[in-house]
Image: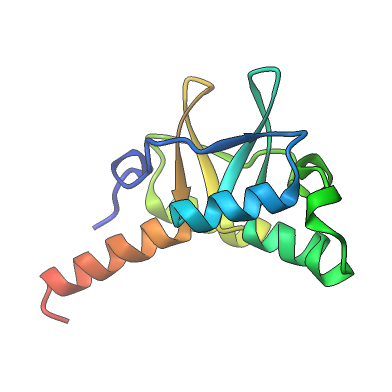
Length: 132
């Protein structure tokens, strides 16, 4: 059954200031059991930093994470999907852009986050309910 992304999204928004360092971002993600943080500047969301961003853009280059501002490794622009769009639309967008996280919006305002983990959990629950 195809669902709207708003039914699966996380409504808790985790964020970090753009000037924070990558070490702090990595620690926050580990502590909170999440794979991304929205990046803020002056109260606005300006990007997203993911575990993959930190690995590919800093760790793989042997950078000192305590000296790398999040804004240097974040991904921009934010990839957004409207809350009423389907999970199929979300998967298509994730695949097209090779990302694992989408910002969910309603009327242009950020309302939540959707991760590939959210979609997999829904798929698993659906398959379990069908007896597979």
